[in-house]
Image (cartoon, rainbow, N blue to C red; front, side, top):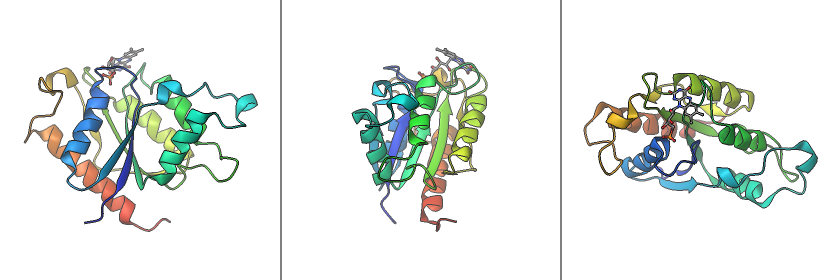
Length: 187
Ligand SMILES: Cc1cc2nc3c(=O)[nH]c(=O)nc-3n(C[C@H](O)[C@H](O)[C@H](O)COP(=O)(O)O)c2cc1C
């Protein structure tokens, strides 16, 4: 089995975020892959075309880590039926070419997951996120879709998905699909 380098991005800056907990759970579930959690979305400046160059250090770091990853896993909350501004800001930065290369998410395999305490499990945020990633020409896992509704009832006291639960099984399947997509040649 190939060992993947997976960069993870949580769209939530919240300390006790369900979405960040999902990413920790993904790492725990994965037997072989190496996870790199980028927790600097809050440090990225607001995107401004007037201040793109020289590249702000936090943006350069994110681009570098995306570039070094075989795949990216994004866990996003739903804010007002879309993705949080901090995540959209990061994606806007990543959509732009570095002065010495192209946009780093182009053709990158990406998995999309999300958790919400509400009944819809981030379905609208995921649609919005997929639309942005499609425009950026990322390669996004289509199936399975991982949506965790009523997330506050699904995690145990250690913020883990209990072993054997449907949510944990589905997250494993999503990781398998991401690995499979990563192993396929780029079109
Ligand atoms: C500004 C804002 C807007 C929100 N809008 C939605 C929404 O549209 N749909 C939803 O299911 N939850 C919504 N929520 C609730 C979030 O799902 C909830 O705060 C969740 O815990 C955020 O994810 P996190 O735990 O990873 O921080 C909203 C929360 C905030 C702060």
